[in-house]
Length: 296
Image (cartoon, rainbow, N blue to C red; front, side, top):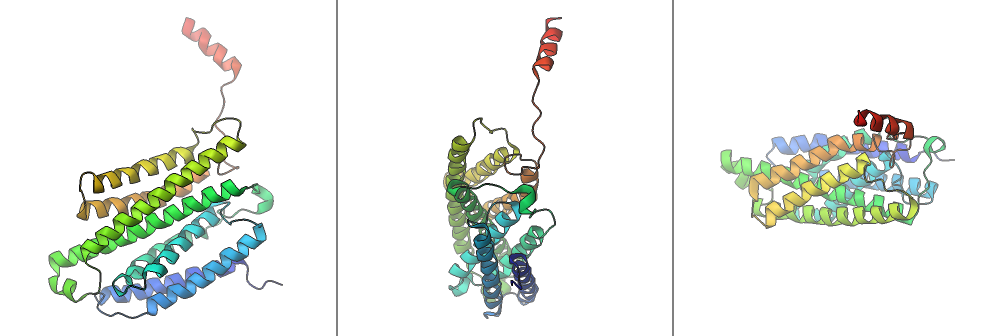
């Protein structure tokens, strides 16, 4: 008998993310002058529950749990926590969790919304290794983009402190803005590489399993738009040396755009959401009528 389902475990993880967010407010009000591991321990506990929930879901599906919007969203949030815990060993980057916890809590609440995890009997999807790899790479990319936006928010906070609260900037334990700018750029580059590979794997898989192209699918068009936006940011950073505040605002704003439009692009996509209305096809009779009208 299973006392806790994977959704129950994820709900507990989201609750701890919320506690971490409340503690982050305390750190923010103190100017990040107090260095302790409370926030890291909270996120570590939530990460354990989050990982257990994903493993439990994966065993129940017998494949990588990235088959619907709920699973893809939780995977992206898991990636953000995993990367934070990896870089959190450096004391100067430990406060990354204080900025990441509100993002994680918001993503978690969004993932728990009704309808994002439909019953498998209603919309079961057959997946193969390429579909799972595509979904996993895309989720990892969004996780890297999410963490880059968190680092960008830290950059903007530290820059504001340097401009208006010089003493607070000196006494705080936030990393120097030069290191934060470098971190934003590297996370964006890693996410862009993962996104490019993920789109390539998705295109290969679509060519293998589909008899007709689906390049007009709303989710594919949205993914290409996101790819172009991040390509523009990288070109702006390394080709034209446009860094600093403008680059940080671009990284933060682009990820906010991803968060606000990710759900809608999935709902409108017949390829990613079987319940979405298909694009109506023009019938031969309609084409004949149009041709007759044009002749007149």
